Picture 1 (cartoon, rainbow, N blue to C red):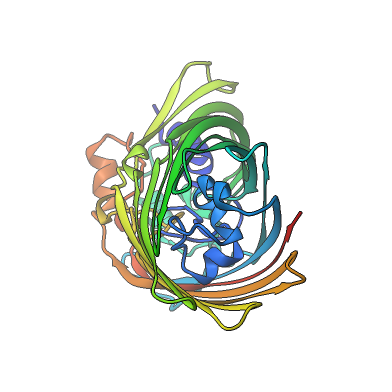
Picture 2: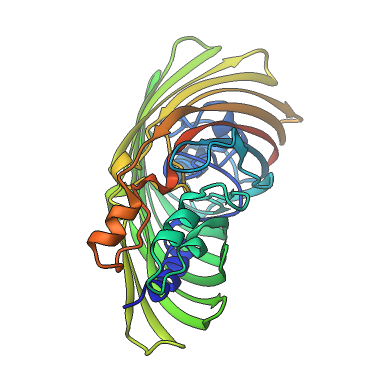
Length: 433
């Protein structure tokens, strides 16, 4: 198998196997922020029985609502990340990720069927990433291509733009077991509208969809509350096509593994005016271990396995705390802080995700009018841990494999100092009816 053939597989693999919704950045590629209140509390909401914005974190919370509710939130995301390339890349100073800002919608509603049953629906964007690196950011690809002359086109592996549009549709039904305890069951339908991955030698796109399931529960007793929410892992089958310069079109299929998500938390009402909550979240990123590409047509025979890309991400644990202070009968001040652990380890580091730990601080304000309308706003700042990458020799890997292994993950092709931050500004409105 020539290097150029592996090149074509790599292009599609990176496109459909790693990246999700344009813009947004999170530990792994999850975007846990799904309501204005959630952003304000750094996502510490799974045990909250009272807030309208808690529904997207724990669907069983709808059983404690005193009426039907509908909410529409807009989440603005601004990502500022960069890399300062290190040898053997050309050391050219800081290079900015040129990803566009984005506005993500989150729509949710619930309605009582009887005093014991309710149904709910959430439409949002639970995963996301966009990375846009200028040409020659990682010059190692070009230098390796110059040395390895046996039919290769390594420079074409240089990532330029990576993005994908995704939304999730989650219907659920809740049961109130008694005045203190409720449970809910639902589906998570993920629709990848378009994946895009452009390199120095290719333009790639694809799409796909799949459904998973979720279960949640909430317990409330006096001033205490406790909640749990679980979303199953899914493997989304994807179909894509790459237009490879000098080669033609290759159609292919692969799977994108999305992790399971478990969030548990406890809340306590310290007084009539003050509520505090602490949550722990476990993300099963080990689901994202390898990405295998198989041809379905085009310039290569159907069934041909082009490449196996090693990701080997690790499961992570995240921590969140939120405080709600009742300013008066109509207004609330919300404060939050959190820590999210990066899933991508040095041995398989890939700049198309450039994952790292992050720390969050957030603030928000909620105001009620006429007991029916709720207007809300929130801001969150997330600092991304600085990360210095010094991988194994990419050239030695290619030579020792006889020119077959062009997987750049974990190699010096991505050597550099990575840093950045994310800002989120969110506005929303809820109505009881």
